[in-house]
Image 1 (cartoon, rainbow, N blue to C red):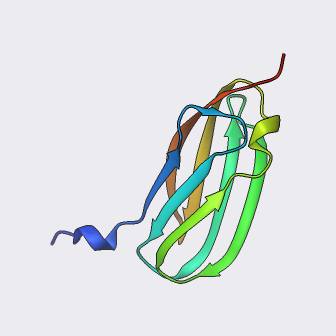
Image 2 (image 1 turned 90 degrees about the horizontal axis):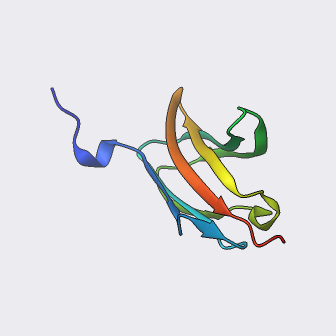
Image 3 (image 1 turned 30 degrees about the vertical axis):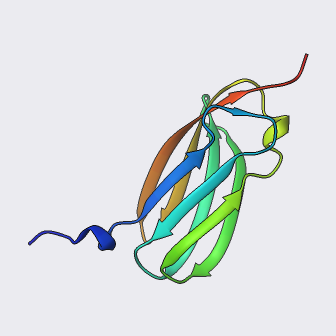
Length: 97
């Protein structure tokens, strides 16, 4: 039995690489459930945690808070829902001198 394409949750980060404070996380949930996004740095430290609580299946957009304060580097965005994790890489290019 194969899953229909609509039964799969998805996530994207744009733009990527990010400069400034305009990072958007677009995600589609295939099912209802408690949803959380974590931003993890290269040393596996949680930089940001956002608990959305219970969300219905559908499309969502979240603007990453304080992305302009992140140092230049690679970060991992984790979308958690129903014991499943979707992972995307985020490249941050800092405007700091």
